[in-house]
Image (cartoon, rainbow over all chains, first blue to last red; front, side):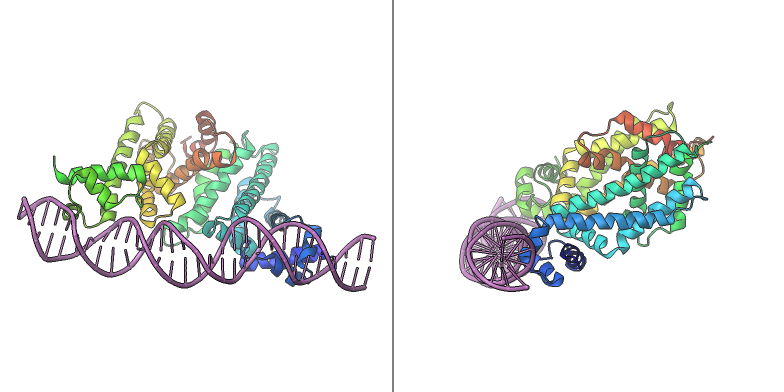
Length: 190
Length: 190
DNA sequence: AAATGACCAGAAAACCATTTCGGTCATCTG
DNA sequence: CAGATGACCGAAATGGTTTTCTGGTCATTT
């Protein structure tokens, strides 16, 4: 198998297990069964590896979001599902969750940047959903990236922030309700 | 003038200047022109002083929000003004800004708690506005605390988070637009 | 009776010796 | 001789020890 790929997989494993900071190049080399120097013939530095690993992560996330979309369902239903899937992915995907933890605890700048990139990709995805909704006439004229940003941050607030203050997490039904009563109702045409 | 009040004012000054952690009891005593021991005849400990100081801060914030409300204006207009005022207060009020900075940099637990309390008071205030809007029939039936939470978090996202990624802050007009097109439209009756 | 500041114990800071790690490159090997 | 390797380097992180600082107390003073 090609060495470049082996290194990427080794790095993914190690990042998932020990985080970015907690991963040493020696460690990656050992898992990938290559010498440390070999890594540097494929990648210019540790951060480049993280970038590439995160690129796959983003692809995975998009696949997961694509899978939730049902063309027969309404914009609201699909929008809700996609946003919930994105946030589920956030906490279930081992590497993703590890990076979030690391950003919170260690504040590793490289990790912060990566998380922003992932977030921004997620928001773009939502924006494209809004655009198709607009094209279909299901959704009012609006600025899709802004509305996508609003939706993402709002969902994040209810799914993630909420349970950090209140004892129990909000149920998905409750979340759907509140958004149907507010943002989705505002977006819906007529 | 009464010593208790002097101590509170001294503490407010010092907290504003040096933050909670950066303030020593000796410092407060000196500014208040009392002996250190005297402080403990009025307050059981440092944290109690912070709590009391924050109580005034909350009062100030409520006064500022009350002042923006114009009973002739619509729910949307008032809601927007109140939320913007709250966020303006957040960054303009010296002590408030200092506490936010301290929470971000030092993560002082006592400060985190205080900020949560302030936030929760702000949200309650919005919730009460929504209730009166509902009573007037201007706003759809809904769960005011949840909607208030949504509004607060969304405004925070556009006012605070936005400019941490994008180069320039979003203009108030843009913010009003996006909310008119989404949440406020969803809330508005007919 | 109220105020005070010297005092104490534990927390934080400062210091520094030692280790670790990302990245390089002279050497090796197939 | 092209590609792989790991010993090596300087910078950064770690950890352990000493010193300083600070919240809170309380015997003494006013």
